[in-house]
Image 1 (spheres, rainbow, N blue to C red):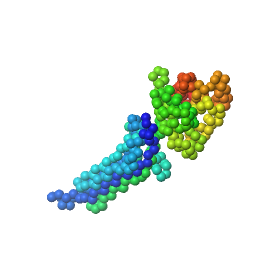
Image 2: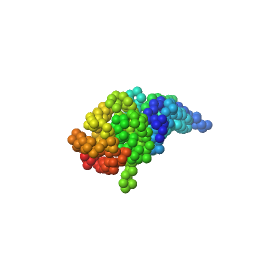
Image 3: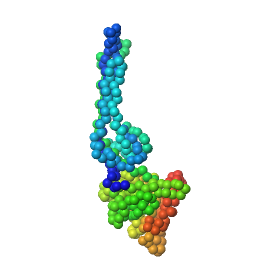
Length: 340
């Protein structure tokens, strides 16, 4: 997956179609010189529709499609003929796409299932023809409704990654290395901060043909909720994960402090994220000798709340990876009240 091809934010102008005008027409035939009203209704203007597509993982195909315009509804005709509807525009988007009003930030809709179709920008309704207004007191209405105008608006489409487990940690905490070891994903790995610039997904195989999806998300820095570092660009991807796996490197002696800093950034961005199931794992255990590992375990036992599962593992030696996968699968399969 090429990082440059991962686009998770686009802003587009949507213009739905105008509804067609109703017809003000009267029946006129050789032997019916004074026929009644028979004006047909105007056609509906075209909608702009989002359709979920599980085969897509980026909004790249919409990056250069800034203006999206649906078709206009045709006017009604005589003999009760209704106008044709305007052509709908269907935009294929990845599952997990959220549409927001670009001016207010209000969420308009979310696409969460493959094949799901949701109207993003509705077309204008067609006007009623004059036959709809005939009554006992008005036998010959000479008026019909105009069609409704379409909607023109700027819309922001954001992609929120759907995964079972989201890796949360500071840059260089070992998130990409873990994902590369437990799955077939090949994220960029290097010994410097922010090697991961976009989320990477990997399917982690488990026993009995079971599996779960893990997402490697760009590292958090202090102040990320205010937009520092990669800021809000990555934080929204955490919202879709069932479990948050917090990683703290064994190189850091202040494990509790780093964990609380990560929690604080999530709290500032969206307090509801703290309601998700959590695991705290200390990575790079291959850098610890037996005595230091015991000290780290003592910190986890004494300073971290008991309801948070804690582990120590090494992606290099693969020590502790099986217990980590066991813990994740147990939390994914058990009900909320059984986990803690």
